[in-house]
Structure formats: structure tokens, C-alpha cells
Image (cartoon, rainbow, N blue to C red; front, side, top):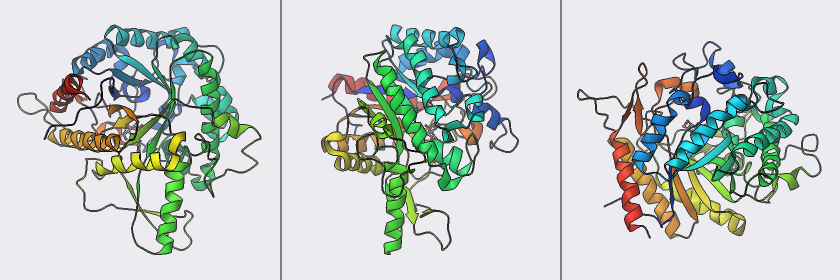
Length: 445
Ligand code: PNW
């Protein structure tokens, strides 16, 4: 059976993020971000690496855009590094910092590839963190000022704007558990970092509307919840986790207010904030990797759920279960939950890590990735056939890049990157994805 085709005009893409691919950490006046600080602190990154050089995409972007053109994609999702645009986290834009994105956007348009820009993919300028980071209300306004500076320069050419990437993962790993930058371990006290990101999103949407007519989106990570056990306590734990992971950053934006139990309270949420946050978005960005298994917590646990292993599925090199069906489940679930309030969806990340290395002939075979993507495109097609309005699909990622706390140990790319030479070698999944796109263009309906 062939991979399904999608309607004409369906957006085929790949995604990356600034700190994970650019490198050039000190180039052209870039300032430090929380990820520079975190990665250079001993013991935080699996292989002791940092994004100082990453894939050196900052200098090799022309080669990378040529690889994209070879895929035949219609869109490239990248992120803009706030510390390049405002090296000290506030004040006027650094023209040299914006120049890079100007060049990138023009190179994409010259190849007929839509630039899709994420404004924030977790690289907060260190001075903004030093002033309280996302725990502090002022960060929301600062983010909107930064968004305005970027849109003033690129607003005429970016085809889709995404304000934030995965604010849930940023809040929970960065401020709740401390496994990501800025490394704070506040557990449930991290919730103000939710409200201030959402407020920043709403203020940024308003700023973007004055600068561009292109659509505006928010990208969230979603995980269908699988409840292990059949007690009321297990089901309550499932509800609690679903509210935190899947609803906290979506319900307020789509007009439902904060989910029960997660309202940050009057000290944090001021009059008018929810009206700012509910500013209409044109697209909901959906990132999907796997479902989450949950059961009732032990007595005395600080959290209202306990995360568990989801058995019975193949696993990626990240040890994440491969559950394509979860994508259909989550898309139908979003439609059922939000109904007419749900805007069109684009899958802004989907992908997997495997230990891909060149064979004796220098070729990189990654049949597991092909099976993974094929399965997820089938699940996506099933959701579309059930009436969910999905307009695009972006593979994470174009390149083997710097995978946050895992450093270079997890390879997500359609293109292999040699750790020493940074040479790019398209994997067999690259040719497969190219053929899927071409066939969909010919036969799409
Ligand atoms: C996303 N989880 O992060 C990010 O948007 C990317 O930057 C990242 O490289 C990619 O997924 C692969 O990890 C996630 O544990 C990090 O559920 C963690 C989770 C999900 C997404």
C-alpha cells in the first residue's frame, strides 16, 4: 500500500529551530540565551556538548535550502533567535542579527518555499531570564516588542507566523523539572510561566496583526493520555494530566478559560489578560510524538498523577513508543473538544530519532524512519477523512541537530550530519519523503 496523498495545496514541510541548528553563537553580535548558559553548565547535557556550532546552519544555510529544494517541500519552519535580534533582551533591533533571517527568507522564496517563522523556540535572552524569565509578567511585553521588531523586517515575506513553540514543554521541563533551560525545579509552582507565555502570545498576535496579513499560529505539543489502571483515582490522574499537557495552553486561547484546577489565580492573572490571550489565531500548530501513560500517584506525591511506561509498542532511539494511531486520536479529539472554535491545523512537527550511521558505501539507510512517517501520514489521512481540517505536515527534522539535553546523541534528521565534518548526507527517508510529496502533488485529492 502506498502512502496516502493529500489535497492540492497541502503544505509539505520540514522543521528546525535556531539553537538546534544555527551555531554561530557569538557571531554578528548575538547575545547569550538561557540555552547557552544551561549547556555550558557541567552535567546538564548527555554528551557534554552545546549548540555553539550545532549544524553551522548560520553559515551553511544556502546548502541547506538546496537540500530543501531537492525534497520539493512547499514550506520550511525555522525559528528566529531572540538573542540575535535583541542581544540584551530589550531595546532596538540588531540589524546584523535580522540580516541572517532576511537572507534565509529570500533564499527560500527564490526556491518557491514558504518561510514559516517561529518567534520563540525556547532560546530566551539570558538578561530576560535574569529579570525573572517567564515567571515574571514583564517577559510577556518584552516578547511582544521583540515580535514587532521581527515582523517589521520580515512581515512582508513570512507566509505563516508561529508565536511560541510548545509552551507546555518549555514550562514543564524548563521551570517545573529543570531538565531543560533555565533549569528551575518549581514543579506545580511553574504555572505562572504558563500564564506569562500565553500573555506574551496574545500580545504578540496583536503586534503581528499591525505588521502583516499572513496567518498567525500557536504551536503546542499534544499527547493523547492513556490511563493505566481502572480505579477512579487512575481516571482522575488521567484527567489531571490531560488538563496540564493538552488543555492548559489551548483552552484559554480558544475561549474556554483555564481548565479546572490550573487557573494561576488573581495574583498572576489580571483583568483583561484572558481577553488578550483569546485573540483569534488562524492556524493551530500541532506537534505530536507519542501518547503519555498515566496512573494514580503514590500517597504524598506533589503531583496529581504519575507518569508510566506505555508497553506493547516499538520504540525509537529516544525510547519513545511509536504509536501512529495516536495522531488520529488526538486530531479527532481536538475537533470534538473545541468544535467550531478550532482553527485549521498544521502538523508543525512529527518525527523520530534512530541511530543512523553511514554504511561502508557512505549511504545512510533509515527504514525505521520511513515506517514511522508512513504510519503517521496514514493516521493523518484517516483524521482528514473523518473531517478534521489539517492543511500541512512538517517533518522534524531536516537535519540531525542538537537535541537539547540529549546533545548530539539523538538523530532526528532526513539528512545525516557528520559530527566532525558537519557534512550533510541525505538518508533513504529523504528520497522517500521527496517521492511522497511528488506523488501527492500529481494525484492529490
Ligand atoms: C520538541 N516530550 O520537543 C521540540 O519542539 C523540538 O525542538 C525537539 O527537537 C523535538 O520535539 C524532538 O524532541 C519535545 O518529552 C521535547 O514529550 C520533549 C517532548 C516532546 C517534544
